[in-house]
Image (cartoon, rainbow, N blue to C red; front, side, top):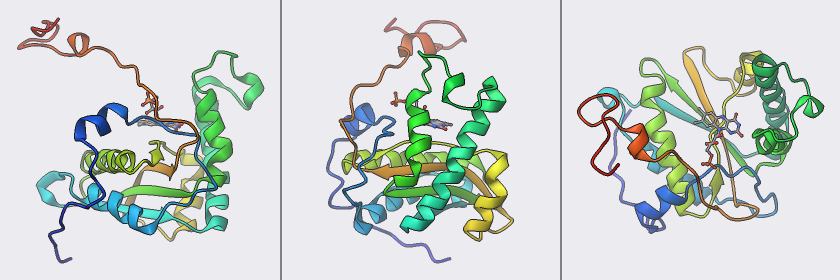
Length: 213
Ligand SMILES: Cc1cc2nc3c(=O)[nH]c(=O)nc-3n(C[C@H](O)[C@H](O)[C@H](O)COP(=O)(O)O)c2cc1C
């Protein structure tokens, strides 16, 4: 494949700090406001700019745009999401979920994936794997944020992979990594809560606090 240079997309003007510090999981997406092909090109171009081992660029993205296909895929996503909860907690449906479960919004997304405006699936081909696709996925999420698009990184489950691969004619040497619904948010991006870096960083030695502790 021929490699090309591309200029910074004119619409990516949000400061990198603002994009990083306000990017978060957006699971409630507007189904009434379409995402343009131009915006999808921008987020995919941003993903293409990420590093990969030896610049081998094994990442491949599959964009699901057709409504009927999103509906069919959304049903598989729902099945996959509940298969993960079954494996992890033995839950079969919402009535098994504790009232205060942190998975309530994720369960809502499992219901609403059928209505997502766009879904992007991330794969790698050949050698490379996760470590060479996730830098690109993060670029994609940040570029989406800069364009005002909500997104969330999600995964699937082995139970549905054969059907997903068949649905999109995915070749046998392609490895699936994640599924990212995209759309304008219902609500706003809101704040995120994270551990302080003073508690997650070792300074010269594991467990030694950094100077800003
Ligand atoms: C590897 C990985 C798998 C994830 N899987 C799911 C998922 O299956 N469903 C979902 O709704 N969110 C999923 N997420 C999103 C996380 O729950 C979310 O990024 C995290 O809770 C932080 O959310 P916040 O940025 O809104 O604070 C996943 C994130 C990662 C990195």
